[in-house]
Amino acid sequence: MQEKILRNIIIEFSNEEAGKLIDLLYKKQNVNEFLIAKRMDLTINQTRNMLYKLADSGLVQFIRKKDKKKGGWYTYFWTLKIKRCLIKYKEKLEKEMKKSEEQLGSRQKERYYYSPLAEIEYTEEEAILHDYTCPETGEVLELKDNSKEIEKIKENISQIQKQIKVLEEEVEVIDKKDEKKKEKRLKDEKDEKDEERKKRRLEREKEKTKEARKAGKKVTKKTAKKVVKKKATKRNTKKKVVKKESKKKVVKKKKGSILKRAIRSFSKKK
Image 1: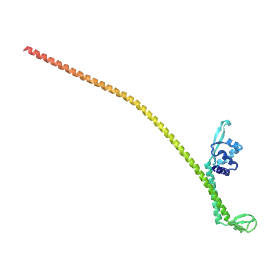
Image 2: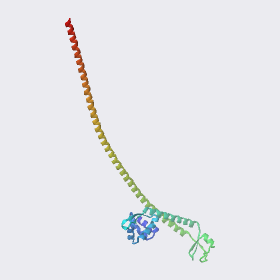
Image 3: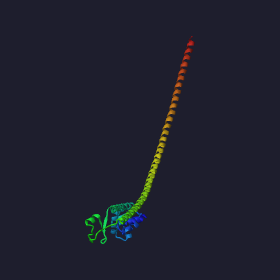
Image 4: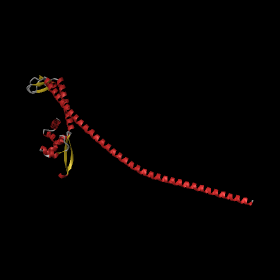
């Protein structure tokens, strides 16, 4: 369905020959112009001219790359812009419909005259200007029945409306696909960022764990040193206390012995 519509659009904007491009470009990306020329049995210049004309209307786009094998000349790669084709053709149909609606309004409001022999139609102003006589045959102009023309214009408008509706549906399908692709791309990007954040977080946690272990070892060593110092201080303190107590005992013993000797010597004198 879409392929047929696109073929008609390309033919509408170019020619019958250009319609063959759909077989080569439909649902493909960056097709080599030399391949297109070969498949269509055209020269490269003929192919480029045809594609450039469509590119001017925005129906195809290209990228170019230098071909080192061909002396550094640029080779063009072409892609069909499906959505743009549909929108462009829809715009064209809307202009046609507007023109047809204007014609319908004119046929419904105004009167028209015609010359049966010359088969020429005249507006009322033209008929008055020629005194209701055909300048070609000299016959009297007849009032034309617009009913058939009106029905024909209405049918044309109806057909255009149907075509526009089909195009809008096709564009809607493309938009939905593009939206799904966009959502998937955003989801993939989000998952990738989340995974990256998770990796960085794990790396930070590992670093913190390493630092904590190092810090723990340092603290343990410091604590051990402090404990050793405290024990040594306690031992030194106990030693000092013991020394002081022993000194006091020695002093007391000395004092006692001196006192005893003095009492003895005094009693002997008596």
